[in-house]
Image (cartoon, rainbow, N blue to C red; front, side, top):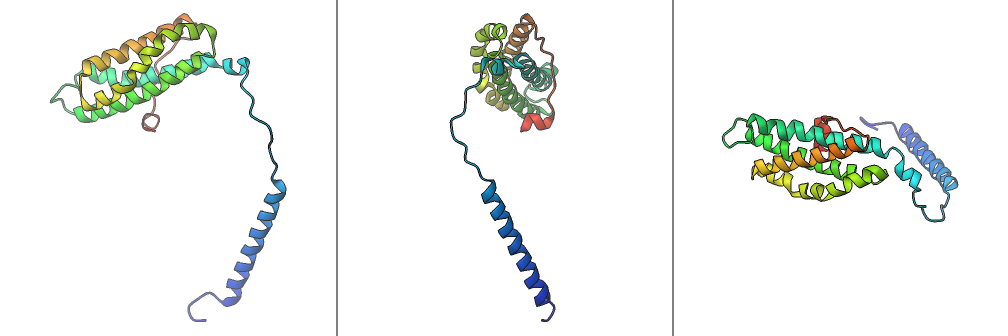
Length: 181
């Protein structure tokens, strides 16, 4: 056989691969078990487990992203027409807005696991829902004053609700990887 693998080695490799494939499939058939029944609902204790901690973590990430990529650039004048780096700042602000909206929704869901937090966050759910369309407006540069003000008011409301429930929310700036993905 010219310039190739000798026939014996090729056949040996193929036989070993076939034997391994057969052995693994045979083992998998024995290991299969059928699960019957339906999933059970979470108990109240499971829902409440770490509800405040999860709330604080999610609200903190939302607050950090809002401050770092929406409020700070706005105060620095980066969102104004003609400003250096405006387009990049608006895109980052839009991503941060979408991230903050996602984390605030998660925080509101976490708050449902704690009776005190649930009562305090309930009035804020409409404000959180209103944030849904704002990241797109921010990316386009539309009415940045209103967008920034709405984000700031919502974040402040969530922080105040957490503080009243004994779960103080502190800004946690998410990494760029968390923000984009």
